[in-house]
Length: 272
Length: 334
Image: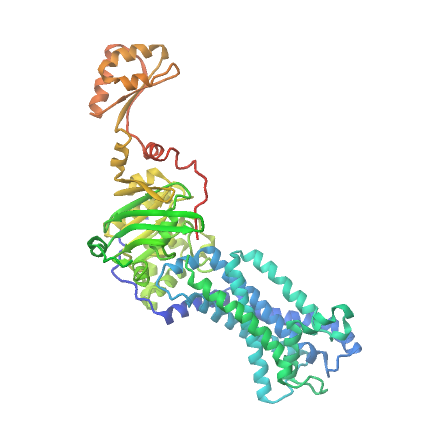
Protein backbone atom coordinates (compact mmCIF):
# COMPACT_ATOMS: atom_id res chain seq x y z
CA UNK A 1 0.00 0.00 0.00
CA UNK A 2 1.72 3.16 -1.10
CA UNK A 3 -1.21 5.39 -0.37
CA UNK A 4 0.10 8.59 -1.80
CA UNK A 5 -2.39 9.47 -4.51
CA UNK A 6 -5.65 8.66 -2.73
CA UNK A 7 -6.17 12.31 -1.89
CA UNK A 8 -9.36 13.93 -2.99
CA UNK A 9 -10.79 17.36 -2.45
CA UNK A 10 -14.38 16.19 -2.61
CA UNK A 11 -16.22 16.85 0.63
CA UNK A 12 -19.14 15.04 2.21
CA UNK A 13 -22.49 16.23 0.84
CA UNK A 14 -24.95 13.81 2.40
CA UNK A 15 -28.43 13.36 0.93
CA UNK A 16 -30.92 11.58 3.17
CA UNK A 17 -33.01 10.05 0.39
CA UNK A 18 -29.94 8.72 -1.40
CA UNK A 19 -28.65 7.29 1.89
CA UNK A 20 -31.96 5.55 2.56
CA UNK A 21 -31.95 4.14 -0.97
CA UNK A 22 -28.40 2.76 -0.94
CA UNK A 23 -28.85 1.29 2.53
CA UNK A 24 -32.03 -0.41 1.34
CA UNK A 25 -30.57 -1.79 -1.87
CA UNK A 26 -27.46 -3.08 -0.07
CA UNK A 27 -29.80 -5.47 1.75
CA UNK A 28 -31.74 -6.48 -1.36
CA UNK A 29 -29.22 -6.69 -4.22
CA UNK A 30 -26.88 -9.28 -2.64
CA UNK A 31 -29.80 -11.55 -1.72
CA UNK A 32 -31.08 -11.38 -5.30
CA UNK A 33 -27.61 -12.00 -6.74
CA UNK A 34 -26.90 -15.01 -4.55
CA UNK A 35 -30.40 -16.37 -5.03
CA UNK A 36 -30.95 -16.20 -1.28
CA UNK A 37 -34.17 -14.30 -1.99
CA UNK A 38 -35.57 -17.59 -3.33
CA UNK A 39 -35.87 -18.76 0.27
CA UNK A 40 -38.69 -16.21 0.64
CA UNK A 41 -40.52 -18.10 -2.11
CA UNK A 42 -39.55 -21.62 -1.15
CA UNK A 43 -40.35 -21.31 2.57
CA UNK A 44 -44.10 -20.57 2.21
CA UNK A 45 -44.41 -23.25 -0.48
CA UNK A 46 -42.63 -25.81 1.69
CA UNK A 47 -44.72 -24.85 4.68
CA UNK A 48 -47.93 -25.20 2.70
CA UNK A 49 -46.98 -28.61 1.36
CA UNK A 50 -45.67 -30.01 4.64
CA UNK A 51 -48.86 -29.19 6.53
CA UNK A 52 -51.50 -29.50 3.84
CA UNK A 53 -50.52 -32.91 2.47
CA UNK A 54 -50.40 -34.89 5.77
CA UNK A 55 -53.20 -33.00 7.56
CA UNK A 56 -55.75 -32.51 4.79
CA UNK A 57 -57.60 -35.82 5.10
CA UNK A 58 -57.63 -36.07 8.89
CA UNK A 59 -58.66 -32.45 9.31
CA UNK A 60 -61.52 -32.66 6.85
CA UNK A 61 -62.63 -35.87 8.55
CA UNK A 62 -62.69 -34.28 12.00
CA UNK A 63 -64.35 -31.20 10.58
CA UNK A 64 -63.76 -27.45 10.89
CA UNK A 65 -66.83 -26.06 9.16
CA UNK A 66 -64.94 -24.91 6.05
CA UNK A 67 -65.46 -25.97 2.44
CA UNK A 68 -61.83 -27.07 2.14
CA UNK A 69 -58.81 -27.44 4.39
CA UNK A 70 -56.90 -25.07 2.10
CA UNK A 71 -59.41 -22.33 2.89
CA UNK A 72 -59.07 -23.07 6.61
CA UNK A 73 -55.27 -23.18 6.91
CA UNK A 74 -54.43 -20.32 4.50
CA UNK A 75 -54.03 -17.71 7.29
CA UNK A 76 -51.35 -19.80 8.98
CA UNK A 77 -49.39 -19.97 5.71
CA UNK A 78 -49.49 -16.17 5.61
CA UNK A 79 -48.43 -15.88 9.25
CA UNK A 80 -45.58 -18.35 8.81
CA UNK A 81 -44.38 -16.38 5.79
CA UNK A 82 -44.37 -13.22 7.92
CA UNK A 83 -42.60 -15.01 10.78
CA UNK A 84 -39.97 -16.40 8.41
CA UNK A 85 -39.28 -12.90 7.06
CA UNK A 86 -39.04 -11.62 10.63
CA UNK A 87 -36.34 -14.16 11.45
CA UNK A 88 -34.20 -13.01 8.54
CA UNK A 89 -34.87 -9.40 9.59
CA UNK A 90 -33.48 -10.17 13.05
CA UNK A 91 -30.50 -11.89 11.48
CA UNK A 92 -29.68 -8.82 9.39
CA UNK A 93 -30.09 -6.28 12.17
CA UNK A 94 -27.99 -8.42 14.54
CA UNK A 95 -25.31 -8.74 11.83
CA UNK A 96 -25.14 -4.95 11.34
CA UNK A 97 -25.08 -4.41 15.06
CA UNK A 98 -22.28 -6.87 15.78
CA UNK A 99 -20.22 -5.75 12.77
CA UNK A 100 -20.06 -2.25 14.27
CA UNK A 101 -21.87 -0.74 11.29
CA UNK A 102 -24.37 1.03 13.54
CA UNK A 103 -21.51 2.64 15.44
CA UNK A 104 -19.81 3.64 12.22
CA UNK A 105 -23.01 5.11 10.80
CA UNK A 106 -23.35 7.02 14.07
CA UNK A 107 -20.12 8.90 13.34
CA UNK A 108 -21.20 9.61 9.75
CA UNK A 109 -23.51 12.36 8.50
CA UNK A 110 -26.63 10.17 8.53
CA UNK A 111 -29.91 11.09 10.17
CA UNK A 112 -30.48 8.71 13.08
CA UNK A 113 -33.50 6.87 11.67
CA UNK A 114 -32.12 6.30 8.16
CA UNK A 115 -30.47 2.90 8.85
CA UNK A 116 -33.54 1.41 10.56
CA UNK A 117 -35.86 2.87 7.91
CA UNK A 118 -33.71 1.26 5.23
CA UNK A 119 -33.72 -2.10 7.00
CA UNK A 120 -37.51 -1.93 7.32
CA UNK A 121 -37.85 -1.05 3.61
CA UNK A 122 -35.83 -4.12 2.70
CA UNK A 123 -37.95 -6.16 5.13
CA UNK A 124 -41.13 -4.97 3.43
CA UNK A 125 -39.67 -5.94 0.05
CA UNK A 126 -39.05 -9.46 1.37
CA UNK A 127 -42.47 -9.53 2.98
CA UNK A 128 -44.15 -8.74 -0.32
CA UNK A 129 -42.30 -11.58 -2.05
CA UNK A 130 -43.02 -13.97 0.77
CA UNK A 131 -46.71 -13.06 1.03
CA UNK A 132 -47.12 -13.35 -2.76
CA UNK A 133 -45.51 -16.80 -2.63
CA UNK A 134 -47.83 -17.77 0.24
CA UNK A 135 -50.92 -16.73 -1.69
CA UNK A 136 -49.78 -18.54 -4.83
CA UNK A 137 -49.13 -21.65 -2.74
CA UNK A 138 -52.63 -21.30 -1.27
CA UNK A 139 -54.14 -21.04 -4.73
CA UNK A 140 -52.35 -24.21 -5.78
CA UNK A 141 -53.99 -26.23 -2.98
CA UNK A 142 -57.40 -24.68 -3.61
CA UNK A 143 -57.62 -21.52 -1.51
CA UNK A 144 -59.72 -18.75 -3.11
CA UNK A 145 -60.71 -15.21 -2.16
CA UNK A 146 -64.50 -15.57 -1.91
CA UNK A 147 -65.51 -12.00 -1.12
CA UNK A 148 -65.43 -8.60 -2.84
CA UNK A 149 -62.32 -6.60 -3.75
CA UNK A 150 -62.50 -4.56 -0.54
CA UNK A 151 -62.24 -7.70 1.59
CA UNK A 152 -59.44 -9.08 -0.58
CA UNK A 153 -57.49 -5.81 -0.31
CA UNK A 154 -58.17 -5.90 3.41
CA UNK A 155 -56.69 -9.41 3.55
CA UNK A 156 -53.53 -8.23 1.76
CA UNK A 157 -53.19 -5.05 3.82
CA UNK A 158 -53.77 -6.88 7.10
CA UNK A 159 -51.20 -9.54 6.15
CA UNK A 160 -48.68 -6.82 5.40
CA UNK A 161 -49.42 -5.02 8.66
CA UNK A 162 -48.84 -8.21 10.63
CA UNK A 163 -45.58 -8.73 8.74
CA UNK A 164 -44.43 -5.19 9.47
CA UNK A 165 -45.15 -5.61 13.18
CA UNK A 166 -43.28 -8.94 13.25
CA UNK A 167 -40.24 -7.66 11.33
CA UNK A 168 -39.97 -4.45 13.35
CA UNK A 169 -40.07 -6.45 16.57
CA UNK A 170 -37.46 -8.83 15.17
CA UNK A 171 -35.26 -5.95 13.99
CA UNK A 172 -35.23 -4.55 17.53
CA UNK A 173 -34.44 -7.94 19.04
CA UNK A 174 -31.57 -8.44 16.58
CA UNK A 175 -30.13 -4.97 17.19
CA UNK A 176 -30.15 -5.48 20.95
CA UNK A 177 -28.86 -9.06 20.91
CA UNK A 178 -25.90 -8.42 18.56
CA UNK A 179 -25.76 -12.16 17.94
CA UNK A 180 -27.11 -13.31 14.56
CA UNK A 181 -26.83 -17.02 15.34
CA UNK A 182 -28.36 -16.98 18.82
CA UNK A 183 -31.16 -14.66 17.71
CA UNK A 184 -32.08 -16.77 14.71
CA UNK A 185 -32.15 -19.93 16.80
CA UNK A 186 -34.21 -18.32 19.54
CA UNK A 187 -36.71 -16.92 17.06
CA UNK A 188 -37.41 -20.32 15.49
CA UNK A 189 -39.32 -21.32 18.62
CA UNK A 190 -42.09 -18.70 18.90
CA UNK A 191 -43.57 -19.34 15.41
CA UNK A 192 -43.48 -23.07 16.13
CA UNK A 193 -45.19 -22.80 19.52
CA UNK A 194 -47.67 -20.10 18.58
CA UNK A 195 -48.30 -21.69 15.19
CA UNK A 196 -49.02 -25.17 16.53
CA UNK A 197 -50.96 -24.12 19.62
CA UNK A 198 -53.31 -21.96 17.58
CA UNK A 199 -56.54 -22.31 15.67
CA UNK A 200 -54.50 -21.95 12.49
CA UNK A 201 -54.42 -25.69 11.76
CA UNK A 202 -57.25 -27.07 13.90
CA UNK A 203 -60.23 -25.57 15.75
CA UNK A 204 -59.82 -24.89 19.47
CA UNK A 205 -62.35 -27.60 20.26
CA UNK A 206 -59.86 -30.23 19.13
CA UNK A 207 -57.30 -29.21 21.79
CA UNK A 208 -57.36 -30.52 25.40
CA UNK A 209 -59.70 -28.37 27.45
CA UNK A 210 -56.98 -27.08 29.83
CA UNK A 211 -55.15 -25.30 26.99
CA UNK A 212 -58.14 -24.14 24.96
CA UNK A 213 -58.19 -20.66 26.58
CA UNK A 214 -54.62 -20.11 25.34
CA UNK A 215 -55.23 -21.54 21.88
CA UNK A 216 -58.30 -19.39 21.39
CA UNK A 217 -56.95 -16.06 22.64
CA UNK A 218 -53.32 -15.98 21.60
CA UNK A 219 -52.44 -13.56 18.78
CA UNK A 220 -51.88 -16.11 16.00
CA UNK A 221 -55.40 -17.49 16.46
CA UNK A 222 -56.83 -13.98 16.51
CA UNK A 223 -54.95 -13.04 13.35
CA UNK A 224 -56.15 -16.26 11.68
CA UNK A 225 -59.78 -15.49 12.56
CA UNK A 226 -59.58 -12.03 10.96
CA UNK A 227 -57.81 -13.31 7.84
CA UNK A 228 -60.41 -16.10 7.39
CA UNK A 229 -63.22 -13.57 7.64
CA UNK A 230 -61.51 -11.36 5.07
CA UNK A 231 -61.04 -14.26 2.65
CA UNK A 232 -64.54 -15.70 3.17
CA UNK A 233 -65.71 -19.22 2.39
CA UNK A 234 -68.50 -20.83 0.41
CA UNK A 235 -69.53 -22.91 3.43
CA UNK A 236 -70.48 -19.68 5.21
CA UNK A 237 -68.58 -20.29 8.46
CA UNK A 238 -65.67 -17.92 7.87
CA UNK A 239 -67.18 -15.23 10.07
CA UNK A 240 -67.92 -11.65 9.12
CA UNK A 241 -65.78 -8.60 9.71
CA UNK A 242 -66.93 -6.65 12.75
CA UNK A 243 -65.27 -4.62 15.47
CA UNK A 244 -65.58 -7.44 17.93
CA UNK A 245 -63.83 -9.75 15.49
CA UNK A 246 -60.92 -7.47 14.60
CA UNK A 247 -60.35 -5.60 17.88
CA UNK A 248 -58.25 -8.31 19.62
CA UNK A 249 -55.98 -8.55 16.56
CA UNK A 250 -55.62 -4.81 16.26
CA UNK A 251 -54.77 -4.59 19.96
CA UNK A 252 -52.11 -7.28 19.60
CA UNK A 253 -50.57 -5.46 16.62
CA UNK A 254 -50.78 -2.11 18.41
CA UNK A 255 -49.04 -3.66 21.41
CA UNK A 256 -46.19 -5.05 19.28
CA UNK A 257 -45.75 -1.73 17.47
CA UNK A 258 -46.07 0.40 20.60
CA UNK A 259 -43.28 -1.57 22.24
CA UNK A 260 -41.03 -1.97 19.19
CA UNK A 261 -41.29 1.49 17.67
CA UNK A 262 -40.04 3.56 20.63
CA UNK A 263 -37.28 1.03 21.27
CA UNK A 264 -36.25 1.15 17.60
CA UNK A 265 -36.15 4.95 17.71
CA UNK A 266 -34.23 4.93 20.97
CA UNK A 267 -31.70 2.40 19.67
CA UNK A 268 -31.22 4.47 16.52
CA UNK A 269 -30.64 7.76 18.28
CA UNK A 270 -28.13 6.21 20.67
CA UNK A 271 -25.15 6.25 18.41
CA UNK A 272 -22.35 4.57 20.27
CA UNK B 1 -21.31 25.85 28.21
CA UNK B 2 -22.34 29.50 28.49
CA UNK B 3 -18.73 30.69 28.39
CA UNK B 4 -17.72 32.46 25.18
CA UNK B 5 -15.47 30.27 23.05
CA UNK B 6 -11.81 30.94 23.56
CA UNK B 7 -9.77 31.97 20.49
CA UNK B 8 -8.03 28.60 20.31
CA UNK B 9 -11.35 26.84 20.13
CA UNK B 10 -12.59 28.63 17.04
CA UNK B 11 -9.46 29.30 15.03
CA UNK B 12 -8.22 25.76 14.70
CA UNK B 13 -9.01 23.09 12.14
CA UNK B 14 -7.56 20.42 14.36
CA UNK B 15 -8.91 19.10 17.64
CA UNK B 16 -9.22 21.04 20.87
CA UNK B 17 -10.35 19.34 24.04
CA UNK B 18 -10.99 21.23 27.28
CA UNK B 19 -11.97 19.59 30.53
CA UNK B 20 -13.93 16.70 29.05
CA UNK B 21 -15.58 14.46 31.64
CA UNK B 22 -17.70 11.39 31.08
CA UNK B 23 -19.04 8.86 33.53
CA UNK B 24 -21.01 5.69 33.05
CA UNK B 25 -22.78 5.20 36.37
CA UNK B 26 -20.02 4.91 38.94
CA UNK B 27 -17.30 4.46 36.33
CA UNK B 28 -15.52 7.75 35.69
CA UNK B 29 -14.15 7.00 32.24
CA UNK B 30 -12.87 10.52 31.60
CA UNK B 31 -12.07 12.85 34.47
CA UNK B 32 -11.14 16.16 32.88
CA UNK B 33 -9.14 15.63 29.72
CA UNK B 34 -7.41 18.54 27.98
CA UNK B 35 -5.31 18.49 24.85
CA UNK B 36 -4.82 20.13 21.49
CA UNK B 37 -3.98 18.56 18.15
CA UNK B 38 -2.89 21.15 15.59
CA UNK B 39 -4.17 20.84 12.01
CA UNK B 40 -2.18 18.23 10.11
CA UNK B 41 -0.65 16.84 13.27
CA UNK B 42 -0.58 13.21 14.35
CA UNK B 43 -1.53 12.94 18.00
CA UNK B 44 -0.83 9.64 19.67
CA UNK B 45 -3.19 8.77 22.53
CA UNK B 46 -1.40 6.21 24.57
CA UNK B 47 -2.80 4.25 27.44
CA UNK B 48 -3.62 0.79 28.73
CA UNK B 49 -6.96 -0.94 28.23
CA UNK B 50 -9.58 0.81 30.28
CA UNK B 51 -7.68 4.10 30.40
CA UNK B 52 -10.48 5.94 28.58
CA UNK B 53 -9.04 6.09 25.05
CA UNK B 54 -12.07 4.69 23.28
CA UNK B 55 -14.43 6.83 25.37
CA UNK B 56 -12.40 9.86 24.30
CA UNK B 57 -12.69 8.86 20.64
CA UNK B 58 -16.45 8.26 21.08
CA UNK B 59 -16.89 11.76 22.49
CA UNK B 60 -14.88 13.37 19.70
CA UNK B 61 -16.68 11.43 16.97
CA UNK B 62 -20.09 12.47 18.43
CA UNK B 63 -21.06 8.93 19.40
CA UNK B 64 -21.52 9.93 23.03
CA UNK B 65 -22.12 13.29 24.69
CA UNK B 66 -19.66 14.41 27.36
CA UNK B 67 -20.99 15.24 30.83
CA UNK B 68 -18.80 18.33 31.07
CA UNK B 69 -16.19 20.20 29.08
CA UNK B 70 -15.85 21.32 25.47
CA UNK B 71 -14.44 19.62 22.42
CA UNK B 72 -14.03 21.17 19.00
CA UNK B 73 -13.23 18.99 16.02
CA UNK B 74 -12.28 20.59 12.69
CA UNK B 75 -13.74 23.85 13.96
CA UNK B 76 -17.10 22.37 15.03
CA UNK B 77 -18.31 21.82 18.58
CA UNK B 78 -19.12 18.14 19.17
CA UNK B 79 -22.10 18.98 21.40
CA UNK B 80 -23.69 21.95 19.66
CA UNK B 81 -22.91 21.03 16.03
CA UNK B 82 -22.42 17.26 15.80
CA UNK B 83 -23.74 17.13 12.22
CA UNK B 84 -20.90 19.34 10.98
CA UNK B 85 -18.39 17.24 12.92
CA UNK B 86 -19.68 14.05 11.26
CA UNK B 87 -19.15 15.58 7.81
CA UNK B 88 -15.52 16.32 8.65
CA UNK B 89 -14.31 13.15 10.29
CA UNK B 90 -13.46 9.56 9.56
CA UNK B 91 -13.66 6.97 12.30
CA UNK B 92 -12.32 3.47 12.24
CA UNK B 93 -12.89 1.36 15.28
CA UNK B 94 -10.89 -1.50 16.73
CA UNK B 95 -12.74 -3.89 14.43
CA UNK B 96 -13.40 -3.16 10.78
CA UNK B 97 -17.05 -2.12 10.43
CA UNK B 98 -18.12 -3.25 6.97
CA UNK B 99 -21.02 -5.01 5.28
CA UNK B 100 -19.69 -8.57 5.05
CA UNK B 101 -22.30 -9.52 2.46
CA UNK B 102 -20.88 -7.01 -0.01
CA UNK B 103 -17.59 -7.10 -1.89
CA UNK B 104 -14.80 -4.65 -1.15
CA UNK B 105 -15.73 -2.64 -4.22
CA UNK B 106 -19.42 -2.58 -3.27
CA UNK B 107 -18.58 -1.43 0.25
CA UNK B 108 -16.58 1.46 -1.18
CA UNK B 109 -19.43 2.45 -3.50
CA UNK B 110 -21.87 2.18 -0.58
CA UNK B 111 -19.82 4.50 1.63
CA UNK B 112 -19.20 6.87 -1.28
CA UNK B 113 -22.92 7.21 -1.86
CA UNK B 114 -23.64 7.56 1.86
CA UNK B 115 -21.26 10.52 1.89
CA UNK B 116 -23.18 12.06 -1.00
CA UNK B 117 -21.33 11.02 -4.16
CA UNK B 118 -23.49 10.33 -7.22
CA UNK B 119 -23.31 6.81 -8.58
CA UNK B 120 -20.68 7.40 -11.32
CA UNK B 121 -18.48 9.41 -8.98
CA UNK B 122 -18.81 6.79 -6.23
CA UNK B 123 -17.83 4.03 -8.66
CA UNK B 124 -14.85 5.94 -10.01
CA UNK B 125 -13.71 6.73 -6.49
CA UNK B 126 -14.09 3.09 -5.45
CA UNK B 127 -11.89 1.95 -8.36
CA UNK B 128 -9.30 4.57 -7.46
CA UNK B 129 -9.16 3.44 -3.84
CA UNK B 130 -9.10 -0.26 -4.78
CA UNK B 131 -6.00 0.41 -6.89
CA UNK B 132 -4.40 2.65 -4.32
CA UNK B 133 -4.93 0.21 -1.46
CA UNK B 134 -3.64 -2.73 -3.46
CA UNK B 135 -6.92 -4.66 -3.35
CA UNK B 136 -7.52 -5.33 -7.06
CA UNK B 137 -7.47 -9.09 -6.76
CA UNK B 138 -9.94 -9.11 -3.88
CA UNK B 139 -12.14 -6.26 -5.09
CA UNK B 140 -15.04 -8.46 -6.15
CA UNK B 141 -14.85 -10.93 -3.32
CA UNK B 142 -17.15 -10.69 -0.32
CA UNK B 143 -15.48 -8.76 2.50
CA UNK B 144 -16.43 -11.62 4.84
CA UNK B 145 -13.68 -13.69 3.19
CA UNK B 146 -10.91 -11.09 3.65
CA UNK B 147 -7.87 -11.46 5.91
CA UNK B 148 -7.42 -9.13 8.86
CA UNK B 149 -5.00 -6.87 7.02
CA UNK B 150 -7.22 -6.61 3.94
CA UNK B 151 -10.25 -5.85 6.11
CA UNK B 152 -8.37 -3.07 7.83
CA UNK B 153 -7.31 -1.60 4.49
CA UNK B 154 -10.79 -1.62 3.00
CA UNK B 155 -12.14 -0.29 6.32
CA UNK B 156 -9.84 2.72 6.16
CA UNK B 157 -10.40 3.15 2.42
CA UNK B 158 -14.16 3.36 3.08
CA UNK B 159 -13.44 6.34 5.32
CA UNK B 160 -11.53 8.10 2.55
CA UNK B 161 -14.22 8.19 -0.15
CA UNK B 162 -14.43 11.91 0.57
CA UNK B 163 -11.84 14.09 2.22
CA UNK B 164 -11.88 14.10 6.03
CA UNK B 165 -10.30 16.90 8.08
CA UNK B 166 -9.79 14.77 11.15
CA UNK B 167 -9.19 11.03 11.23
CA UNK B 168 -9.71 8.87 14.32
CA UNK B 169 -7.86 5.59 14.24
CA UNK B 170 -8.79 3.55 17.28
CA UNK B 171 -6.07 0.93 17.75
CA UNK B 172 -5.76 0.45 13.98
CA UNK B 173 -2.99 -2.13 14.06
CA UNK B 174 -4.24 -4.37 16.85
CA UNK B 175 -4.09 -7.94 15.58
CA UNK B 176 -2.39 -7.11 12.27
CA UNK B 177 0.66 -8.85 10.84
CA UNK B 178 3.84 -6.73 10.54
CA UNK B 179 3.40 -6.06 6.83
CA UNK B 180 -0.18 -4.84 7.22
CA UNK B 181 0.86 -2.78 10.19
CA UNK B 182 3.55 -1.12 8.09
CA UNK B 183 0.86 -0.33 5.51
CA UNK B 184 -1.28 1.43 8.11
CA UNK B 185 1.76 3.35 9.32
CA UNK B 186 2.54 4.53 5.79
CA UNK B 187 -1.04 5.66 5.48
CA UNK B 188 -0.90 7.67 8.70
CA UNK B 189 2.21 9.40 7.37
CA UNK B 190 0.35 10.21 4.16
CA UNK B 191 -2.50 11.77 6.19
CA UNK B 192 0.08 14.08 7.65
CA UNK B 193 1.31 15.04 4.19
CA UNK B 194 -2.26 15.79 3.16
CA UNK B 195 -2.73 18.09 6.14
CA UNK B 196 -5.24 15.80 7.81
CA UNK B 197 -5.23 15.76 11.60
CA UNK B 198 -4.92 12.23 12.93
CA UNK B 199 -5.78 10.99 16.40
CA UNK B 200 -4.27 7.60 16.89
CA UNK B 201 -5.06 5.58 19.97
CA UNK B 202 -2.73 2.75 20.65
CA UNK B 203 -1.40 0.46 23.31
CA UNK B 204 1.81 0.05 21.35
CA UNK B 205 4.49 2.44 22.46
CA UNK B 206 6.62 2.00 19.38
CA UNK B 207 3.64 2.86 17.23
CA UNK B 208 3.07 6.15 19.04
CA UNK B 209 6.80 6.75 18.92
CA UNK B 210 7.08 6.12 15.18
CA UNK B 211 4.06 8.11 14.02
CA UNK B 212 3.14 10.83 16.46
CA UNK B 213 4.14 14.48 16.48
CA UNK B 214 2.68 14.75 19.94
CA UNK B 215 1.79 12.08 22.43
CA UNK B 216 -0.60 12.22 25.34
CA UNK B 217 -0.57 9.46 27.90
CA UNK B 218 -3.97 8.69 29.44
CA UNK B 219 -4.43 6.59 32.52
CA UNK B 220 -7.61 6.25 34.59
CA UNK B 221 -9.35 8.95 32.57
CA UNK B 222 -6.80 11.73 32.93
CA UNK B 223 -3.86 12.91 30.85
CA UNK B 224 -0.83 12.05 32.94
CA UNK B 225 1.80 13.28 30.49
CA UNK B 226 2.09 14.97 27.13
CA UNK B 227 4.78 16.07 24.74
CA UNK B 228 6.82 14.73 21.87
CA UNK B 229 8.21 11.22 22.11
CA UNK B 230 11.64 12.73 22.79
CA UNK B 231 10.34 14.99 25.51
CA UNK B 232 8.61 12.11 27.20
CA UNK B 233 11.71 9.97 26.99
CA UNK B 234 13.78 12.81 28.36
CA UNK B 235 11.64 12.78 31.48
CA UNK B 236 13.05 9.41 32.43
CA UNK B 237 16.57 10.78 32.43
CA UNK B 238 17.76 10.78 28.86
CA UNK B 239 20.27 8.45 27.20
CA UNK B 240 22.46 6.08 29.10
CA UNK B 241 25.26 3.71 28.36
CA UNK B 242 25.16 0.06 29.34
CA UNK B 243 28.30 -1.99 29.92
CA UNK B 244 28.13 -5.80 30.14
CA UNK B 245 31.37 -7.57 31.08
CA UNK B 246 32.25 -11.08 29.89
CA UNK B 247 33.40 -12.06 33.37
CA UNK B 248 31.43 -10.77 36.34
CA UNK B 249 34.63 -10.95 38.44
CA UNK B 250 35.77 -7.92 36.48
CA UNK B 251 33.01 -5.65 37.78
CA UNK B 252 35.35 -3.89 40.28
CA UNK B 253 37.91 -3.35 37.50
CA UNK B 254 35.21 -1.75 35.33
CA UNK B 255 34.10 0.50 38.16
CA UNK B 256 37.68 1.60 38.63
CA UNK B 257 38.24 2.13 34.90
CA UNK B 258 35.09 4.18 34.36
CA UNK B 259 36.02 6.42 37.26
CA UNK B 260 34.38 9.82 36.83
CA UNK B 261 31.92 8.52 34.23
CA UNK B 262 30.15 6.50 36.93
CA UNK B 263 28.27 8.83 39.29
CA UNK B 264 27.73 7.88 42.91
CA UNK B 265 24.03 7.05 42.48
CA UNK B 266 24.72 4.62 39.64
CA UNK B 267 27.46 3.02 41.71
CA UNK B 268 25.11 2.74 44.65
CA UNK B 269 22.53 1.03 42.42
CA UNK B 270 24.92 -1.88 41.82
CA UNK B 271 24.29 -5.07 43.77
CA UNK B 272 26.29 -8.31 43.96
CA UNK B 273 23.77 -9.75 41.46
CA UNK B 274 24.28 -7.00 38.87
CA UNK B 275 25.54 -8.28 35.53
CA UNK B 276 25.85 -4.86 33.92
CA UNK B 277 26.77 -1.30 34.77
CA UNK B 278 24.73 1.67 33.65
CA UNK B 279 26.17 5.15 33.29
CA UNK B 280 24.43 8.33 32.17
CA UNK B 281 25.39 9.43 28.66
CA UNK B 282 24.64 13.14 28.49
CA UNK B 283 26.93 13.50 25.48
CA UNK B 284 25.54 10.42 23.73
CA UNK B 285 28.07 8.70 21.48
CA UNK B 286 30.96 10.74 22.91
CA UNK B 287 30.31 9.30 26.36
CA UNK B 288 30.16 5.85 24.82
CA UNK B 289 33.50 6.35 23.04
CA UNK B 290 35.14 7.66 26.20
CA UNK B 291 33.87 4.69 28.24
CA UNK B 292 35.07 2.30 25.57
CA UNK B 293 38.52 3.90 25.51
CA UNK B 294 38.89 3.70 29.28
CA UNK B 295 37.73 0.08 29.41
CA UNK B 296 40.06 -0.80 26.55
CA UNK B 297 42.98 0.78 28.41
CA UNK B 298 42.08 -1.38 31.42
CA UNK B 299 41.89 -4.46 29.12
CA UNK B 300 38.41 -5.45 30.26
CA UNK B 301 36.65 -7.92 27.98
CA UNK B 302 33.03 -7.02 27.26
CA UNK B 303 30.03 -8.91 25.97
CA UNK B 304 28.24 -5.71 25.07
CA UNK B 305 28.50 -1.98 25.37
CA UNK B 306 25.77 0.16 23.95
CA UNK B 307 24.11 3.51 24.04
CA UNK B 308 20.49 3.18 25.11
CA UNK B 309 17.64 5.62 25.00
CA UNK B 310 14.72 5.09 27.31
CA UNK B 311 11.82 3.51 25.45
CA UNK B 312 8.28 4.76 25.86
CA UNK B 313 7.85 1.58 27.88
CA UNK B 314 10.24 3.05 30.42
CA UNK B 315 8.33 6.33 30.28
CA UNK B 316 5.06 4.56 30.79
CA UNK B 317 6.39 2.52 33.66
CA UNK B 318 7.71 5.59 35.36
CA UNK B 319 4.50 7.60 34.84
CA UNK B 320 2.00 4.95 35.82
CA UNK B 321 3.96 2.48 37.87
CA UNK B 322 2.87 -0.33 35.58
CA UNK B 323 3.59 -1.47 32.05
CA UNK B 324 0.83 -0.80 29.52
CA UNK B 325 0.30 -4.42 28.64
CA UNK B 326 -0.02 -5.66 32.20
CA UNK B 327 -3.28 -3.89 32.87
CA UNK B 328 -6.26 -6.04 32.01
CA UNK B 329 -9.18 -3.86 33.06
CA UNK B 330 -11.79 -3.88 30.28
CA UNK B 331 -12.11 -0.81 28.09
CA UNK B 332 -15.16 1.19 29.11
CA UNK B 333 -17.63 1.39 26.25
CA UNK B 334 -21.08 2.81 26.44
